[in-house]
Amino acid sequence: MSSGLRVSYFHSESVGGFYYGRGHPMKPPRLSLTHALVKAYGLDRQMEVYSLRRATVEEALLFHTPEYVSFLAELDGIDLGSPPRTLPPATGLVLAPRDPYSARLARCFPPLGLPMASTSRSPRPSSLSHGRQAGHGHQGCLTPQVSQQSAEDLAAAKKALEESMRRHNLGHDDVPVFDGVLDFSLLSSGGSIDGAARLNAGVCDVAINWSGGLHHAKKQAASGFCYMNDIVLAILELLKFNPRVLYIDIDVHHGDGVEEAFYETDRVMTVSFHMYGEGFFPGTGAREDIGEGEGKQHAINVPLRAGIDDRSYAYIFKPVIAAIIESYQPTAIVLQCGADSLGCDRLGCFNLTIGQHADCLAFVKSFGIPLLVLGGGGYTVPNVARLWTVETATVLDVELTNDVIPYTEHFDLFGPSFKLIPDTHAGIANLNTRTYLDKMKSDILQQLKTIPF
Ligand code: TV7
Ligand code: CA
Ligand code: ZN
Image 1 (spheres, rainbow, N blue to C red):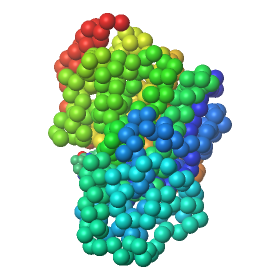
Image 2 (image 1 turned 120 degrees about the horizontal axis):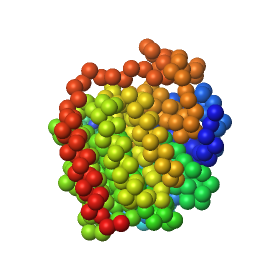
Image 3 (image 1 turned 135 degrees about the vertical axis):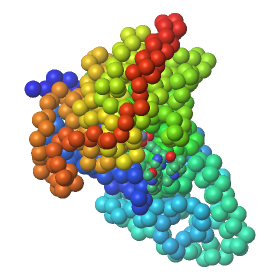
Image 4 (image 1 turned 90 degrees about the vertical axis):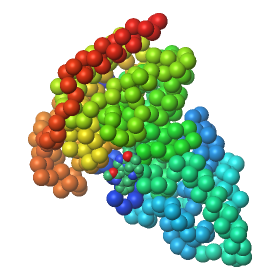
């Protein structure tokens, strides 16, 4: 029935309780939905299930700057959403509404003991920077100290805050400062780092963290729904024991944050398949971007056009990945499984089925190299849960039949088909011609030949 592969899987219910704000396409409850389905199929009994540990600030600092992390901490320690504010109304900043799930989350957040960001000269009482304490309400009213502040001081503080927000690309629609944003990021990162550590220790063959895969975060800036780059942190952990790590990204968006982090090293090869052109986010990942310095030829970009279907995707994915593994000989692989490359995704414009997406994972797994499997994008929520459940089964070599899904408390969300594998075929034209794909394939094989291995 199952392969005997040792699989470590990371999940905590708390991660599904975060809320990016009204109308935001990134919906953490998809992680709870995925886990509910994984359990309903009994997959949790065939692997080791671990809670997400919060990455420590020290771990985060292996990639992110102290200034950025302490700014996130500072923001997360302030109850930005509930008036009366201890800060002047931050006009022009997008603040997420109160998290409806927050009451369910026990958030005990210890003081960070980090130097505060430059905005620490703002007139807030310093106790605010120590974050929320479980069981305490939000700090409601203005302290006398604050109410005595002059208008100029408040204006200066506001300006400093806005300046920091801008510098770290925070607070606009894509990357709102929501309640618990640092907590969410540390949990996601902790799962990916621990997965990497278990692979390093040789105590599992595959590690899975569906709450990871947040590939856009930069060392000192948020981007594209991502605040902390769990993938970079996990790869840094893998690099403690692995001479060469291969990163493969099948999210519909370019894996820019991971590519950038390792652009100048030959110890990590990054490969991203993504929609490219027509102003599609983030706009990077041209075929010509191949790495620099020591890292030259070690970034591989596979820019694709809208509407790519199963056949075209497999046609480019399999030979390219096989050639990369053959020539680079990675000792560990990280696969970002963003579900927004499925057909019918709310943000994506590819046309993959769940079957093909999972086949990519099966293909990568078939090389028998220690593998860290991560989540990522995915905006048609029930399909994200379906895909990552099927992919968890794929890792375990368990075949799930395409029947009505088992009953869970979320059953109603899986309508109208209620099937495990619904038709995700979008009526969108495949603009990737055979000629285009052939040229790209031969370009990439050529790129690999120029690397002296
Ligand atoms: C890994 N596309 C992340 C993918 C990040 C994509 C974008 C939105 C979007 C944001 C919203 C929203 C949205 C319907 C979609 C140029 C802009 C255009 C914000 C409206 N609805 C991952 C990021 C991408 C936020 N950003 O790879 C709140 O779409 O295209 C852009 C940038 C400026 C900002 N505006 C969009 O999958 C996890 N954002 C509704 C509410
Ligand atoms: Ca990608
Ligand atoms: Zn994406």
